[in-house]
Length: 153
Image (cartoon, rainbow, N blue to C red; front, side, top):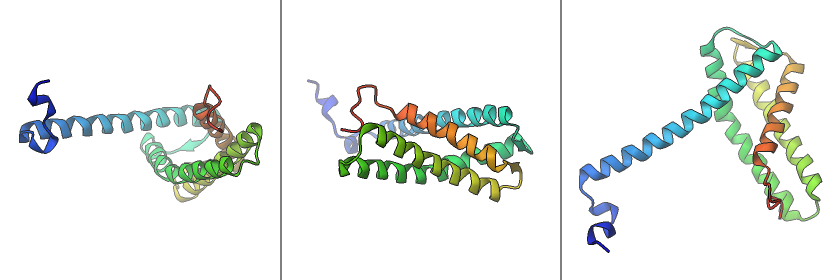
Protein backbone atom coordinates (compact mmCIF):
# COMPACT_ATOMS: atom_id res chain seq x y z
CA UNK A 1 0.00 0.00 0.00
CA UNK A 2 0.97 3.55 -0.56
CA UNK A 3 2.09 5.42 2.56
CA UNK A 4 -0.07 8.41 1.55
CA UNK A 5 -3.27 6.37 1.91
CA UNK A 6 -2.51 5.43 5.52
CA UNK A 7 -2.14 9.01 6.77
CA UNK A 8 -4.38 9.93 9.73
CA UNK A 9 -6.76 12.85 9.28
CA UNK A 10 -4.83 15.12 11.64
CA UNK A 11 -1.73 14.81 9.43
CA UNK A 12 -3.54 15.82 6.24
CA UNK A 13 -2.84 19.27 4.78
CA UNK A 14 -5.25 22.03 5.82
CA UNK A 15 -6.74 22.24 2.31
CA UNK A 16 -7.61 18.55 2.34
CA UNK A 17 -9.15 18.83 5.81
CA UNK A 18 -11.32 21.77 4.71
CA UNK A 19 -12.39 19.87 1.59
CA UNK A 20 -13.33 16.75 3.57
CA UNK A 21 -15.22 18.66 6.28
CA UNK A 22 -17.04 20.79 3.68
CA UNK A 23 -18.02 17.75 1.64
CA UNK A 24 -19.35 15.84 4.65
CA UNK A 25 -21.22 18.93 5.88
CA UNK A 26 -22.84 19.48 2.47
CA UNK A 27 -23.88 15.82 2.31
CA UNK A 28 -25.47 16.04 5.77
CA UNK A 29 -27.23 19.32 4.97
CA UNK A 30 -28.46 17.84 1.69
CA UNK A 31 -29.83 14.74 3.42
CA UNK A 32 -31.62 16.82 6.06
CA UNK A 33 -32.99 19.20 3.40
CA UNK A 34 -34.23 16.22 1.38
CA UNK A 35 -36.03 14.77 4.41
CA UNK A 36 -37.63 18.13 5.19
CA UNK A 37 -38.67 18.53 1.53
CA UNK A 38 -40.34 15.10 1.60
CA UNK A 39 -42.21 16.08 4.78
CA UNK A 40 -43.11 19.48 3.31
CA UNK A 41 -44.61 18.20 0.08
CA UNK A 42 -46.26 15.26 1.84
CA UNK A 43 -47.89 17.55 4.40
CA UNK A 44 -48.80 20.04 1.66
CA UNK A 45 -50.62 17.31 -0.28
CA UNK A 46 -52.25 15.89 2.83
CA UNK A 47 -53.41 19.34 3.99
CA UNK A 48 -54.85 20.10 0.55
CA UNK A 49 -56.73 16.79 0.50
CA UNK A 50 -58.13 17.31 4.01
CA UNK A 51 -58.97 21.00 3.60
CA UNK A 52 -56.57 22.37 6.21
CA UNK A 53 -56.34 26.17 6.13
CA UNK A 54 -52.93 27.83 6.18
CA UNK A 55 -52.04 31.45 5.47
CA UNK A 56 -48.98 30.93 3.27
CA UNK A 57 -46.46 28.41 2.06
CA UNK A 58 -44.02 30.02 4.50
CA UNK A 59 -46.26 29.24 7.46
CA UNK A 60 -46.59 25.69 6.17
CA UNK A 61 -42.79 25.47 5.96
CA UNK A 62 -42.53 26.63 9.58
CA UNK A 63 -45.11 24.02 10.56
CA UNK A 64 -43.12 21.28 8.82
CA UNK A 65 -39.81 22.41 10.33
CA UNK A 66 -41.29 22.54 13.81
CA UNK A 67 -43.08 19.22 13.29
CA UNK A 68 -39.77 17.71 12.17
CA UNK A 69 -37.87 19.07 15.19
CA UNK A 70 -40.50 18.36 17.87
CA UNK A 71 -41.33 15.03 16.23
CA UNK A 72 -37.75 13.86 16.74
CA UNK A 73 -38.29 13.99 20.50
CA UNK A 74 -41.46 11.88 20.25
CA UNK A 75 -39.77 9.50 17.82
CA UNK A 76 -37.01 8.85 20.36
CA UNK A 77 -39.64 8.13 23.01
CA UNK A 78 -41.52 5.75 20.68
CA UNK A 79 -38.29 3.91 19.77
CA UNK A 80 -37.38 3.58 23.46
CA UNK A 81 -40.85 2.23 24.30
CA UNK A 82 -40.60 -0.20 21.37
CA UNK A 83 -37.26 -1.44 22.64
CA UNK A 84 -38.69 -1.87 26.16
CA UNK A 85 -41.66 -3.80 24.77
CA UNK A 86 -39.27 -6.12 22.92
CA UNK A 87 -37.09 -6.61 26.00
CA UNK A 88 -40.14 -7.44 28.13
CA UNK A 89 -40.71 -10.51 25.90
CA UNK A 90 -44.39 -10.64 26.82
CA UNK A 91 -45.80 -9.26 23.56
CA UNK A 92 -46.48 -11.07 20.32
CA UNK A 93 -45.43 -9.44 17.04
CA UNK A 94 -48.97 -8.27 16.29
CA UNK A 95 -49.27 -6.77 19.78
CA UNK A 96 -45.96 -4.97 19.28
CA UNK A 97 -47.16 -3.52 15.98
CA UNK A 98 -50.42 -2.34 17.53
CA UNK A 99 -48.52 -0.83 20.47
CA UNK A 100 -46.07 0.99 18.21
CA UNK A 101 -48.94 2.20 16.03
CA UNK A 102 -50.74 3.56 19.11
CA UNK A 103 -47.59 5.28 20.39
CA UNK A 104 -46.81 6.75 16.96
CA UNK A 105 -50.39 7.94 16.59
CA UNK A 106 -50.40 9.60 20.02
CA UNK A 107 -47.01 11.19 19.42
CA UNK A 108 -48.08 12.56 16.03
CA UNK A 109 -51.36 13.81 17.44
CA UNK A 110 -49.58 15.52 20.33
CA UNK A 111 -47.14 17.30 18.00
CA UNK A 112 -49.81 18.32 15.47
CA UNK A 113 -52.18 19.49 18.20
CA UNK A 114 -49.41 21.46 19.91
CA UNK A 115 -48.34 23.14 16.69
CA UNK A 116 -51.91 23.81 15.63
CA UNK A 117 -52.57 25.57 18.94
CA UNK A 118 -49.29 27.53 18.89
CA UNK A 119 -49.36 28.60 15.24
CA UNK A 120 -52.17 30.97 14.41
CA UNK A 121 -51.36 30.82 10.69
CA UNK A 122 -52.53 27.19 10.41
CA UNK A 123 -55.97 25.94 11.39
CA UNK A 124 -56.41 22.18 11.80
CA UNK A 125 -59.69 20.87 13.18
CA UNK A 126 -59.55 18.14 15.85
CA UNK A 127 -60.95 15.39 13.60
CA UNK A 128 -58.50 16.36 10.86
CA UNK A 129 -55.64 16.19 13.40
CA UNK A 130 -56.69 12.63 14.23
CA UNK A 131 -56.92 11.63 10.56
CA UNK A 132 -53.49 13.13 9.80
CA UNK A 133 -52.01 11.42 12.87
CA UNK A 134 -53.41 8.04 11.82
CA UNK A 135 -52.05 8.46 8.28
CA UNK A 136 -48.61 9.50 9.54
CA UNK A 137 -48.52 6.61 12.04
CA UNK A 138 -49.38 4.13 9.27
CA UNK A 139 -46.64 5.59 7.07
CA UNK A 140 -44.11 5.41 9.92
CA UNK A 141 -45.02 1.78 10.66
CA UNK A 142 -44.73 0.90 6.96
CA UNK A 143 -41.37 2.64 6.61
CA UNK A 144 -39.94 1.12 9.81
CA UNK A 145 -41.25 -2.37 9.08
CA UNK A 146 -38.46 -4.91 8.65
CA UNK A 147 -39.33 -7.16 5.67
CA UNK A 148 -37.31 -10.03 7.18
CA UNK A 149 -39.25 -9.81 10.45
CA UNK A 150 -36.13 -9.15 12.54
CA UNK A 151 -37.36 -5.91 14.13
CA UNK A 152 -38.99 -7.64 17.10
CA UNK A 153 -36.45 -10.42 17.77
